[in-house]
Length: 180
Image (cartoon, rainbow, N blue to C red; front, side, top):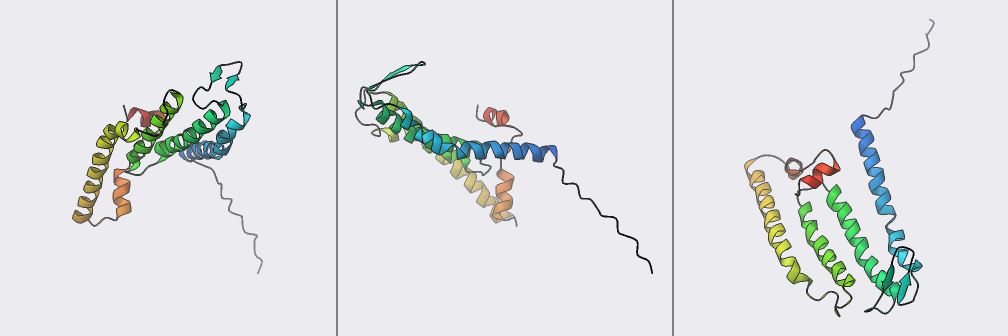
């Protein structure tokens, strides 16, 4: 009995256009997250003087009396806000609006750092956060209540209900437009 050689079945591993876009987006997001240590340590390139003069601008650190210290404090706030924004715009869970609370807190702290006249950076942040929290917290609670009402009424798992509440616009600009 003579056996014929089997034809090898070639499996093409081609990506669909959506998969390619997802791969590119994932690569960009991973790269943005991976550069955060370099962003944080940018303050190392700032001189220890009170006045930092570059070809773009001149920075005079009145309150901190040292430009390097001022930039170190600023990067300590900017890097977490940067990471929170990445998380906010890439999160697909129903609760992602809660991330607006720490984002607002860090933005107010950054504004206070830039205002060198203040003597305490983190003093009144909660007062300014009350309007943000007054909107975000009840909204999240109502979404949570809707999820648990559906759990009691249906035989779906929590993951299935969470997928039902996902907001997944097709691209970045549609997600931005959803907030305005």
